[in-house]
Image (cartoon, rainbow, N blue to C red; front, side):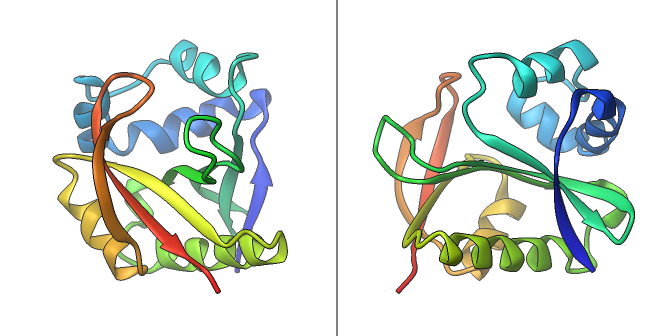
Length: 156
């Protein structure tokens, strides 16, 4: 069964393991195959981090991360910043199941729309998000200055 759990600093090694199992993504996002523990601490636990980051768990095993910003002040949309499944667990439907569970949380909060950005060269992610009902909106630069394709989905 898929569940969510808030990330904590004492589990930074788990965050590092999940992140660094996705070397192709890291290469597209940062130009390197891996991220350091310090980079991840700064990304997820700095005072400027405004989104909520959760572990995706399969029973008692940490298999991924999901990051959500309920209201982006730049466009006043809720944004999904990240859905990452550990490389060893990809291809089994866990990403889809995690996202479906996440969507239930959105509906419980009466959130009627969601946006996300996909790195230009991340064709696997584009295919995944389109299969989840997202539609392309535009290209934009993210807060790090990296160009992404923006997708959105509306819930009735």
